[in-house]
Length: 365
Image (cartoon, rainbow, N blue to C red; front, side):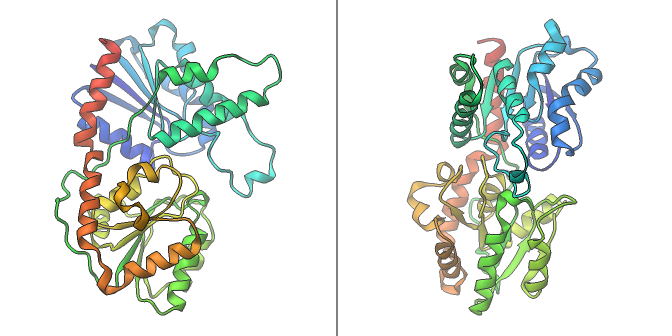
């Protein structure tokens, strides 16, 4: 098939997803992108840009778009030229937590309505986790109740009939099944998430300062992507944890990034928003033991047998579990290898054929 892939926010996990599937699909994929800036404008106007860039929309068998675009607008303007369209939700603007600044302003429901209209207009809707699909439906129901009468009917039913969960792929095919022990001295803690408020970095660095005050040795690699504006706590932590930090800032080289992950003993997330968690899956695949909050998408990704060791519900539990895993006698190599193998099915080599099959069935069921 000839597939047109539209990505209005080509950065971070959106970029990894688009390029990963394009490289591993057996179909011919044309990837059209826009820089990862001004997301509100992308949602409102990306479709106008793409329609001007596409020469022959009829030449494609299928359009694959992501959530940072007004699909209803795109299909309305494309008219009968538009082939079947799949909408993939990495995130949605209704359940995305507001920053402290945004909470002071009047709620903006426009982006949420664009998500809803896009879902109704798409032929199929794919979500990157069961948690995300459930959260999306809940927010649609809440927003429908806020509308003045007369309210639209059966919106949730229409969305659920077209929705399915399709996990994203990850680019770690070369990872061995038996990993090196990763027992560096001092042990390395990995932070490989975006430098954003929704990853709750204040809690992460608070716990690390407590470790330092207890004289527990560790080193730290802060590898996540950052934009021009990011929480002040990162600069504060760089000063206070200067002796512990061995890497600080986004690592553009995939090879160098994977080397850091392979050196890691533990990967920590304190996120309040995570619909899948590619950064955690990657780190675990390369041998890091995950310490994660018992919420969001994480419980459906981790094996049940290890969940009591992995999940925390309080700051104190995170501190205790992190202290345990930093002890030389608690490298947990066998458990980390087992967790690494559990992540292998998320590789694009495994996921892409499933994507291809689902898309083929849309054209020839």
